[in-house]
Image 1: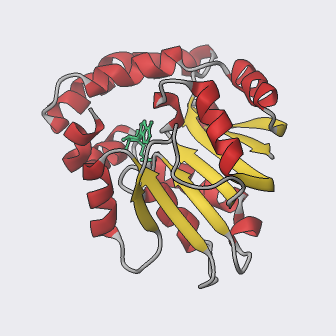
Image 2: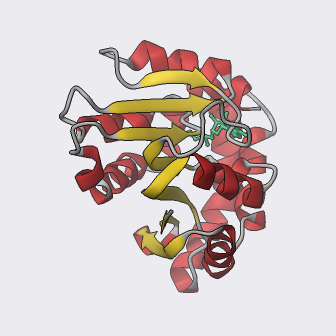
Length: 222
Ligand SMILES: C[S@@+](CC[C@H](N)C(=O)[O-])C[C@H]1O[C@@H](n2cnc3c(N)ncnc32)[C@H](O)[C@@H]1O
């Protein structure tokens, strides 16, 4: 499904989010600025798609010794990330987020932007993140939420009825942009997600809403 929308993915992201997606990626990167500033920081961006989260992390990692890796299981998405790259970092690796090709305790920071929600098994995803984090390392999962109140009603109207039509028209592919609202509806609420993180073994899990809760950042420490 993701491979089928890869050619128009960036354009659609920016159009459908009114460019707010860029602000969200930057905000996540700023949240982890102190980790990114470490000389030997090791950072993994899961479900990196065409790379924008990883590029934002890279911009705040001034040290040449830092390692930033973007992984995704869609080859077509990674090819676009590679084409957008202007240097040797980030590096792109084809991998399943549920079965990562890294030893235990490798990373200071693991992020996932709008990818975690798509995993077939959220608990397995959390355990895999925890496995590759070093002790004291942090995780940041940015994903969609469902805002409440009047804002929530307007958002649901847009997200369920307008977005699928525009998404299907621009991508030329029927399916993925109808799947998007369905995937958000099945995603656990912040309370449930925090409980899952706690049960998986994350310390001090927290959720910060972005833009009225349309999106939000889950954080946790190993
Ligand atoms: C909505 S896109 C997000 C891409 C990017 N992080 C962004 O913020 O634009 C979701 C990405 O997750 C990837 N993905 C979904 N499940 C995955 C899995 N189990 N392992 C690796 N990548 C996965 C898809 O291929 C897709 O590129």
